[in-house]
Image (cartoon, rainbow, N blue to C red; front, side, top):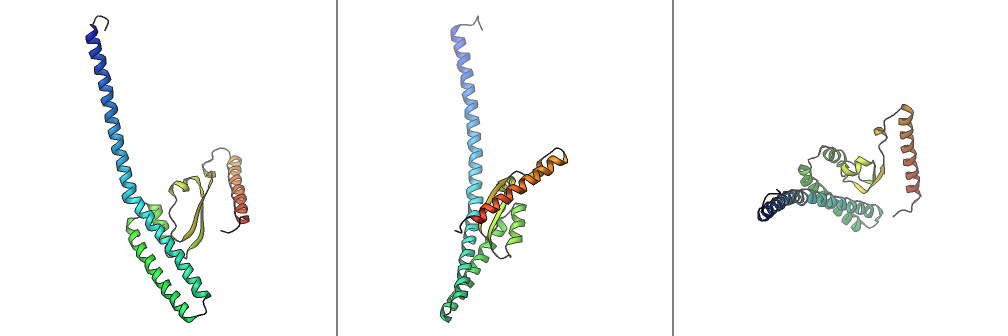
Length: 187
C-alpha cells in the first residue's frame, strides 16, 4: 500500500468505507424487518387475546356484582332485573371464551384456560417463581393476579443441606410475604 498513489489509496479506503456502510445498512434493514414481524405478531395475535381476556375479566366482575345485587335485593322487580343481567353476562363470557379458545396456542396457557374456564372465579391468583412471570398463563376467573418473585429453589445445586436450605429460605420468604399481604387493608 505504500507504493500506491494517493488517489488509489483514497479510492480503496473510500470503497472499504462504502462496503462497511452497505453492510450496516443491510444489517439495519434485516433488523427492522425482524422488528416489524415481531410488532405484527404482537398487534395481530397478542393484543386481541389480551383485550378479549380483559373483556372476560370485566364480564366476570360484572357477573359477580349482578349476583350480589340479586342476593341482596328484596324487591322482586330488582331480582328479576339482576337475573336478566346475570344471564346476559354469562352469555358474554361464553361468547368471549368461544372466540378466545381457538386462538390460544401455547400449551401452558391452553391447559390453564381449560382448567379454569369452568371453575368459579378466583379473587386472587399469585404466581411465585421467576419463570412464571414470563410464562404465566392467564387465569380468566381471577379478579386480581399478582406475581411475587422468588428464586426457584429446585435450581440450586450443591449438597443436600444447601438444597434444603434454599427450599427453607424460599418457604420462609413466602410466609413473610403472605403475612405482609394479609395485614394490608383490602382495596
